Image (cartoon, rainbow, N blue to C red; front, side, top):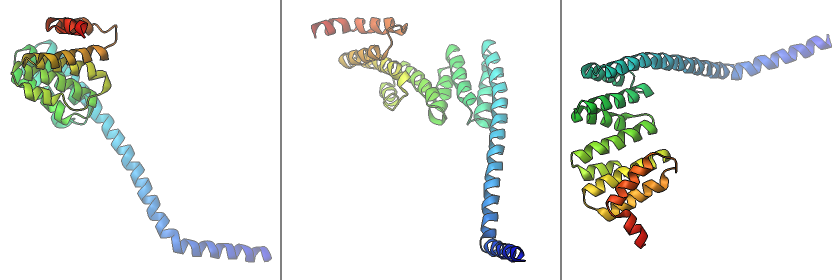
Length: 216
């Protein structure tokens, strides 16, 4: 009988506790379970988005290989419209920019690169876009815009390419001392085995970089 009384007291205590906190706990569980379900749903959605974007990117690559500029542009536009948050959209825009550049359509190439630079979700792809876009601005003699584009922060692996591109623009502006400094910075940031070192060194030598270095 004592056991029954003790058990009843525990039961009454649990009922009182549940009456006070049960509703709150229920809502916490609902929110937690709802959040978990939403997260799983979002991951599934992202997976489907990536898969669909991947297929479209394959179509873009095939169109680029066939030099079908119109199809490349459509595929890139579709990815940017429907799958803008996937890496495939950035990859597609870069591929479309190259295809347009190879076809001498600088306006289209510039548009694709600007999209990546502005809307890209990945710093690496944005860096590639900005460096290539600065090259087009160099061709257009928009030197200040090119240097402005290269003035921001870039991932460390792109530091040499950024410095090299700055050197090209500064040479076009006839700012040779600044160009030498940029090319030297590019060489300093390049690994010894980097095949691009020879080209940068040639550009530096062409503007008296070697002579200036020896004099120093």
